[in-house]
Length: 159
Image (cartoon, rainbow, N blue to C red; front, side, top):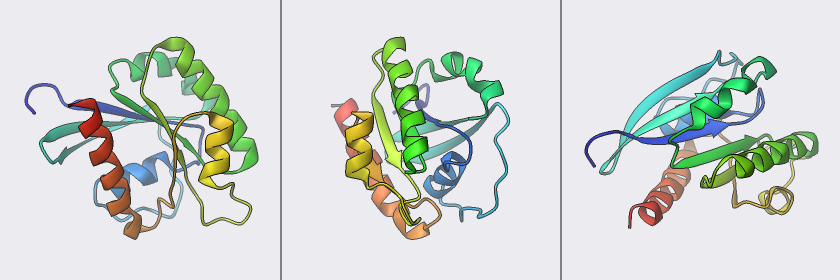
């Protein structure tokens, strides 16, 4: 694909694993210590015939007013949740907001499936009412599964 890179946005509240997931996708070893994203962080990757711009949107409440501008032009938006009941309900509000904004392709990532008390991806999907995929973003072994998902999603979008 030539021209502009495909834009994929990652959105969610603080500490849910957005940056860790992007590091995983990029082939970097995910950090285990937390450094909050300020504003947004951009990464570009080449994936098969696509150039992809990964937009990591800061989840702190001070940055929420910027989300509308940052998500413009996204072909996919991943809403990341840490799979705790409280965060899943907060993520539901994000998804409802996104659905009112535009007709985005919205998917959810039920991250931190390895933590005690984590809701299963199926339960998260039932609450969020969008396709939801389980993940443990700190596990490098999960990179292949996520890239397979990305391959499948991009092939649907670019048929």
